[in-house]
Image (cartoon, one colour):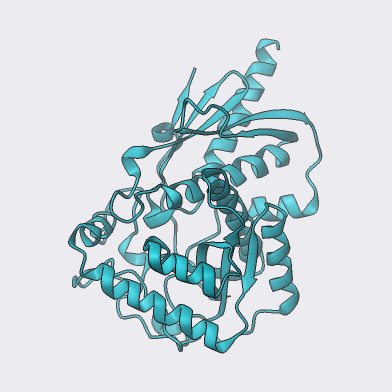
Length: 330
């Protein structure tokens, strides 16, 4: 490569890393770091941002990083390069989750451009939804997006099954609220109003006094008795939205990364059509409850995410660390 080509490739890779930083992550921990060496991006897990109490196996961390990997792939395609991805390329370096190189020239298709445009617009929702229905063709499209990454998104149609998911989420939240180390961990990632921090959950990102959905899906208690939160929830109804479960056939580190890639494609496609997602991971953080769901509701597949999808008019702003904090260049 000549000097000009090297500069162009470096710019492409930095742009792809910038896109990656907008991926969703548990408690907005942003548990990733990136290295750029020549024409290669290295995606690494940042163990300092791992939830020791809530995610000891690192499952949610790897799902978060998988979502970031999807953003890298989309950005490279939009910039005209087919991404060449190796997942878990070195068994002796467990923190190295993937490497990505720009490959052959490619013209991004319409769906790739659609998803890429939503990377910075997508927001996590932590309240109820409007009563506006979610069109069935859109749900089918979301299922297809997950399937393309080797995961399964299952909309839960059965009212009894929805009640089970609701009850088990509330039960897990109640149990976790009594667990001091876990509660302190959640509080540690909650940001007070006006905080300059670019990670964690801002006070404006959850309702001050949430309205209960029917059936109710418990949310995290980020405020923990403090008068934090937004009043935006009062403009929404108590609609639960469409309840869905993301599953994988296996439960290895590679499956967790694949689940994250599938999740992000679902979220970006949803965002493009005005849908937001609320996540409920409490029950999945307790082995026996997760195993119960696998056996009783998930056809023996491993549940990786429980979510609700619905229409909101949420215009909140996301917070992300700058690229300079997560990128090491050689």
